[in-house]
Amino acid sequence: MKPSAVKAYIVETAVDRTWIERCLKIDDVYRVGDTRVSLDSLVYLFREGMSAESMVESYPALTLETVHGALAFYLANENEIDTYLAEGERIAESQHAQSREVNADLIAKLRRTRHEKQIPG
Image 1 (spheres, helix red, strand yellow):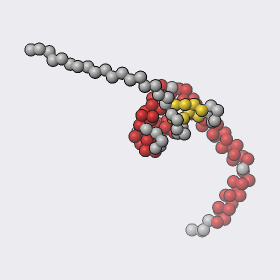
Image 2 (spheres, rainbow, N blue to C red; image 1 turned 180 degrees about the horizontal axis):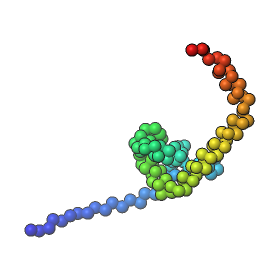
Image 3 (cartoon, rainbow, N blue to C red; image 1 turned 90 degrees about the vertical axis):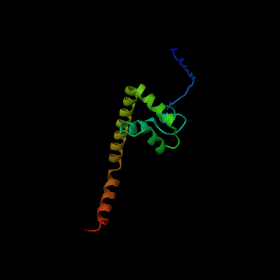
Image 4 (cartoon, helix red, strand yellow; image 1 turned 120 degrees about the vertical axis):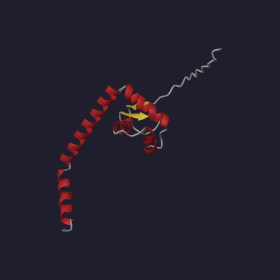
């Protein structure tokens, strides 16, 4: 019996894609490709277990390819990106606390007004 010939096809592609760009001049944020979608958005969805297909539905500017590329970038640079995200959360909390302090009088006034306008149950 003659061994059957198996043809192997090797497809080589030289695809040079930029999945993520870091915009230092504007707001020091990682953007997905040439869109305004932040890597942060996709990472948080990924951590929640959202599928790549659902991410594309949520962000029509993205393709399945760009989502997978962005997630591959995240997984390859997970420690760096997690540190970046933690720093962003720390900065946001600091700004939120500062805003609450600076606007304490306004916040109190809004709470009083809301309380006064509530209809008794």
